[in-house]
Length: 272
Image: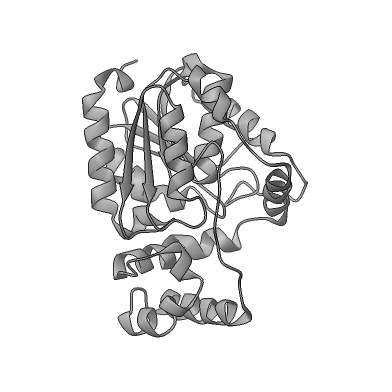
């Protein structure tokens, strides 16, 4: 599939892969600052954002789409950054074509993802709907955050519930949610039923990696992310306290500072 992609900046390429539900736009927390020094490519994965499809597909189709995307722009070597599902796809790309990628940044992701999300009640759905609509109308309104946001499903995605995170929810998460297709939902559900575990293959990855996680993440737990970091031969691990799965939106400046320092410590990552 010819994916829709957002290109920003110039220089050494960084392929930025979003999660589920997600979109290229949802990766702006990474692409906006990184594009000051690099060329960032943030595609809408098949079935997400503007890469629309009504036909069912397999998760492996994402990998072929992404390889086709890199070929389209004649990118022979790049750095990988993946958030949640995007991190799993980044791992798969690296295992398929190890010579094509210089390094790996995993954000709230794991090679054997495990979650501990509590059961969802009808009140959760009600408060999430109210919080989302009000936040879309008035992003970051503290009254809405305290009254509805903290009582909604957002409490499992965020821990700090600060206005900046709710601004990202309004500007990027809502549109990503509504532009995620049924085919994308079905592909992910099928993959989850089959299970996913690539831990035994991680020893094959010889490029530097950075693994970042939130201590309160119940979608992909910090423990499962740490397990991945420990299995990667050349990895650096960082777990942020009192944040959850959307921690790049809770503490964006700290996350970007750590990414940039890691890149600076590994200059060969961004050399053609």
